[in-house]
Image (cartoon, rainbow, N blue to C red; front, side, top):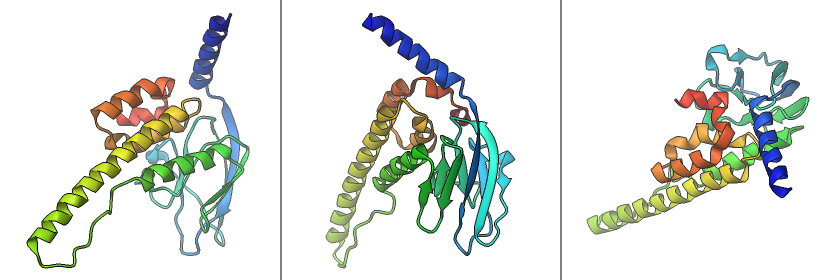
Length: 210
């Protein structure tokens, strides 16, 4: 009986994943005073990016998307991994605030933001050791130590990516993680992530990686 229930649950998960329903969502919010450009990009289809009007530091848009789509709000079409807001339409109304980085009305969007922040905080990018000496040995030692620490940070970042994919395999978050951070993984971690990703491999955003 337990096996039958397990198989039913697995089939139900696959069905939900493959046939995401259409939802109507209103997204509004406040941007920084200096911001004059704001794009809305669904599933990284930058060729059809929508330029949103900003009036007195505010914007609002209503659209219909799949419930598993990713909606990126950004002042650039490029660099999705640097976007302040990537939204998952799990409610009818989502509000964002560029001034404090907050998201209201979307539990999944908040979770995605937290996951991405944790992964980015593990990045060795920008890490360096200051050397206040003219001694070549001091520079050599600092260089070797810096490389060792960066490799350790990269390993921790890869472990965080894999853990985040495993912990969220019941929702769409892994698709965005893989889209943004797959290139940071070595072959071992890529194999582990691929084995965990399951049906999310068929998400439209991941077709862009092939």
